Image (cartoon, rainbow, N blue to C red; front, top):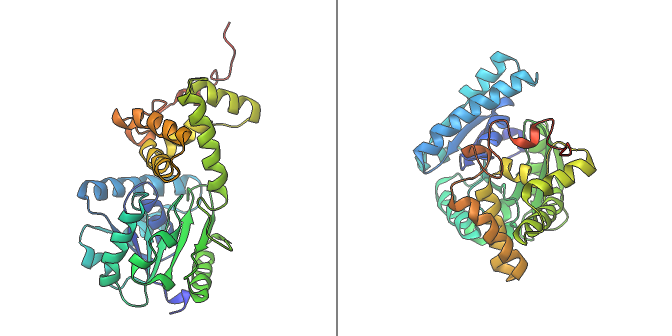
Length: 302
């Protein structure tokens, strides 16, 4: 199979990134099946895709007809057999847990055609953690997307057992879908950008967890000095505090670092209250119209 033979993309996980990746592929004429075990998540994903389509039209990335055509090329299902049928490539975006990822790849290894390429959109794990569980380690690599409305960069990260042919096919596929492919020479948790971003988050979480300052003032410090529109906690809200907590907890448990444990406990306070950020309407900030977007957020108090 050559990259131009890829006609059907299977998205595993209908969450924050899954629906974005699926829509982006659909805008380039590919058939897309979005799979999730939750019917509620699938319904929500359809609404999110329609919202994303409107954003693409507003940003003049697509016209209305193109946006509608892309949406019509997408299907949403909780039936794994139906999802896997004729899939040429998988993009996995399930929770950041290597056992969970290994299990779902193992399931779809039995259902997908032999030629299907397996990719993971993991943010902080590395594919060697679940390569053997996938059943086809030579066809597995990370293909990591960022916010598709604003970024056209995708990271390709092979593990030691990924075949060079798989890497070349993924690079060609990425370029075919209008993306800049950044190919890593070796595995690195967090790729390039996310490695830097994660360290930034850790520093901000530690300052808040140790009550050096409030999340609000930590954001104000960063925004005021750097002249940017959001600070670390505003960005964490957009990612989802449950996702951030899951990643923080995983590495805290893996490293047994006391400060990482403290950070995970701090992020858990939001998750326990169901305050997950933008997607629930409340996290560190309240949405829509979060405080850090207000003109007076960086103004001094009289």
